[in-house]
Image (cartoon, rainbow, N blue to C red; front, side, top):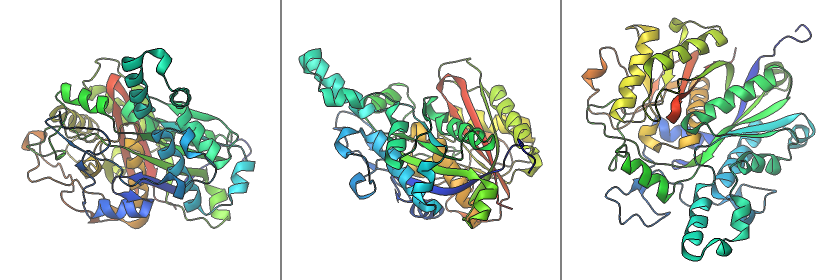
Length: 407
């Protein structure tokens, strides 16, 4: 490679802490089978809500995964992030000492930061005033600690960058980490995201009228909304040539990304802006619409989001739509981690040869137009070469990543 030329970037490690289990392979197998990670809420008293289901991570035991962090000093979102990162580093099969000695850092996405910590502090403030705030909880509250936890757990000395562009945040981090490795500013990067289920988030989406009662049905005629969810996800990125040289398993190559913000409406997505973001991602990755074999949709299951997303895809692809599915049908909406889980399942789909499904679909909404293949039910054997991963967020923050099969 000529000196100074951009490097190819490989994904060689994956980590997941989810409502469908811990570890990338456990998560991917559950997705392929169309299993649900949704259950009655346990993390707070939901008895006052008419809707009481979420995608919670039950039996989370960070002490079994983490080696460096003192568990009691970190909030739940940070522990999700650090645990997923540790899993990704282990999965990459690389000497941890080599990584910690190199130019290596993390970029982690979030929507709500340490939401459970903030909720606890708010309760203390309401009931006892500022003087009753627990100093230990105050130290856990900053959202920036989510990426800091990753660096502290893995001994990384590069930057620890938390990106809070809400539900598209993990795609932003993947694009950012890709640029860091591609340009040589970093030798290794961890990308991903983390968020936690909490009472005020659940209440907020209920008040918005965006919450489903118990089942998320993206693209279905009877879809009614999202289910709140939580978890942590991480991808380990390194130079492609270095990965080949060390004999690493390469799940996928990051080909490029696109980001934009239409800033048009606080909550309503804009199809024209999303379509332009898709085109920007294609240009950056050097691909054409006809090259895309699968789209991992944002696919929240709200009537507006799904219709807008399909409309935007049609603006770019015409009526020749690639298969498009939503894993939120199984794990719910993990907020800032959502497009990170999408990226992870895209990597597994490319490596193992399948299309992830949309569960809970009984009738694809005919109003979405002809040719919408949402891979209903369970996963489908396939050989995708290039896939497209969507992340959209309140405020019009759009992020699209493109990944390809290692070759």
